[in-house]
Length: 302
Ligand SMILES: Cc1cc2nc3c(=O)[nH]c(=O)nc-3n(C[C@H](O)[C@H](O)[C@H](O)COP(=O)(O)OP(=O)(O)OC[C@H]3O[C@@H](n4cnc5c(N)ncnc54)[C@H](O)[C@@H]3O)c2cc1C
Image 1 (cartoon, protein in one colour):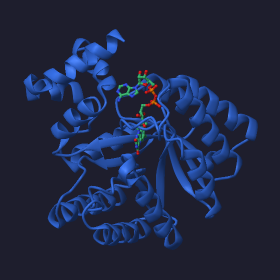
Image 2 (cartoon, helix red, strand yellow; image 1 turned 180 degrees about the vertical axis):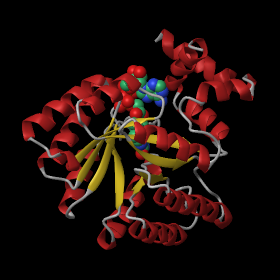
Image 3 (tube, rainbow, N blue to C red; image 1 turned 180 degrees about the horizontal axis):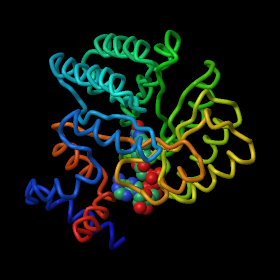
Image 4 (tube, protein in one colour; image 1 turned 30 degrees about the vertical axis):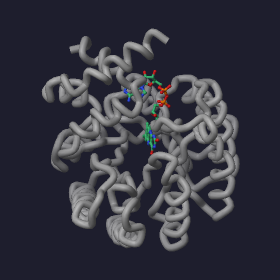
């Protein structure tokens, strides 16, 4: 309760915080402004036995030019990952690629990215955004999935509908899903609010995914209890290593991720980069004041 008040106060004061301080807070979580920065970060992660996924910061494009600019940088990312022989793929937000104003444009960009992923032997993960686009995102994923196995989606355990969505996506054939808790603030009618309820939902969907042999499951969490539950399920069901991977955000839970890698589990780090780091960092903080607690910790941790 007190933390809530403190977090909200920090968010209210954000516009007064100088840009260099926001950068100081964010730089742990963001590889830098350029593709080169991100690729250097991936090299470093690969050397530590971790794969990566590149995320170009930016969402909610409002015109074709912005959507095509998003495509361009992702195309360069796929090409550079291949020419530098890195172990990485890309994660995209459909709203950056035009979903909200021109779904046909978004689909054609996705098809071109998937062609490139095919020729570079890579993969495109569709991030899940807020609930206004959940259905349309999953629909497009299913459509694309029919023509390519280079595409995967993400589902959010906080949505009450997720276990049903997971079962239905599995019904479509081999599916490749990332399971995360969900980052947006959603109404109670559609989303669990209690911490334990979200954990239960995560465990239920994970069990369904692992038991029914999804092509690959991305277990995207830093919650130690959920990582423990996942490890128990993997062990009990004897899930092969090419069927799952743990996924964590750059700069978060580094001790846990090293421990998983040392124990031989596949682990992928989500590496955000791009010029829009400032807008991204401040928007994330405004959208979800709980993250503001991390800001304070980072401010004092040098
Ligand atoms: C690889 C990856 C991809 C994701 N993709 C999506 C997506 O497509 N759509 C979506 O809605 N959400 C996505 N998320 C975000 C996710 O939904 C959660 O909001 C976020 O991961 C925090 O949940 P948690 O499971 O780590 O558990 P929590 O209980 O929230 O966190 C567990 C612990 O991890 C640490 N921690 C968690 N997040 C942070 C942070 N940002 N900074 C510092 N420490 C932190 C804290 O110590 C916390 O106590 C993704 C997360 C990951 C790891």
